[in-house]
Length: 468
Image (cartoon, rainbow, N blue to C red; front, side):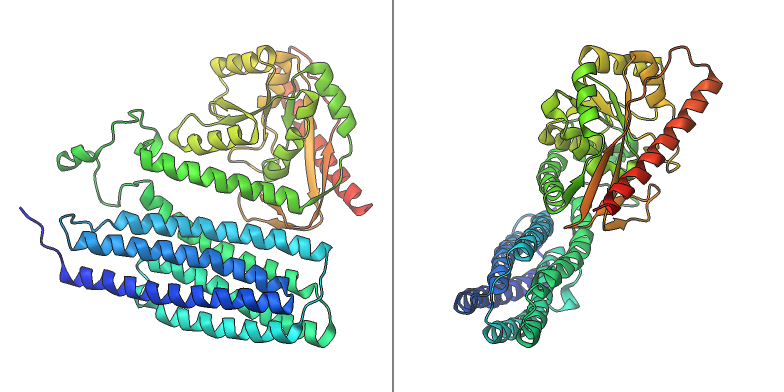
């Protein structure tokens, strides 16, 4: 049976391609004008926004090419019209948005540290022209094609530019009337947070498609679909997910972006104090390996606390699921210089304890443990770390984090994300060695005591933050 191309779909792709072409032309033209305006006015804000528009121009070009690919395919012999090319473009666009946000935050920090004079009148004029240009592009990419991920990604980029133009206009007015230049980086940070929310939604949608998730209502085991099953990774885990080449590509790109974002957060936050750090260094040099613990909500800077001990000989290990879902975290751990321990934090049988003993004692790797993970309850110290310390004779090293400005999520662990430019305290507690031969009652008592030690250490970290 031959496939006849659908004229309606072909026309729809052509329309998408034309609209993206117009958006690309307008954005690229104004980007050049903004570079000239920024150079003439001496405005770093306008030059930064021109860099933002340069990224958007590249993203629009990518989307335009993908639309052309889909258009040609829908007119040829391939029935699906290469829609996956459009999805890939949407995914890359979303990643580019995260890169833009990282760059905005970095530049905002530089501007806060070294303010520069700006010609406010020229800045305002160019910003208002940018506002009109972005409104024109939004008109071209209007909502009637919202179902197309490719056009939606391009529209998100333009919205980011639009918000940037609004922020630049407001900043120019403030600079003209008061001369207060810090308004520019402050507004840049606020705009970047809005971009993150929209880009995150787009990234999730496109990732689900690229990772070849089985659509709802489709049986992957049906006879007519057997030829579609991948044979690269036969070991199917929970949810019947497979480690396909497409999934690996997504993971590799996501890991690079995630590592850069983590480095960004670490770089933009200032370590205000590290009480107990010298004691922790001495413990590492003496014991070679230990059992560091911190609450699940402190994952971001808890890992940083351990990596700071590597010059003293600490080999940091992170427990990663052996399922397909653990492939990306394992790649991220390798990128940051840690050691991957494949297993499950919910399995604490004799074999798991034996493997941990080999890791801690013979390989001298220190496994980072979140005692209330992986699913809570929050701040409930589970027995794993106590049992490992008892078995290996290695000390438990409590760690806690406090930040001057924190975004607390509504997740089960109340995850804490220090905001950019916050002051952060990393507190290292007194190492605790567990006696051998604990009976069940003694084990439960030690769990309670360790939970209290972490809570006390949290209070100490907050107190050190207040002394600044």
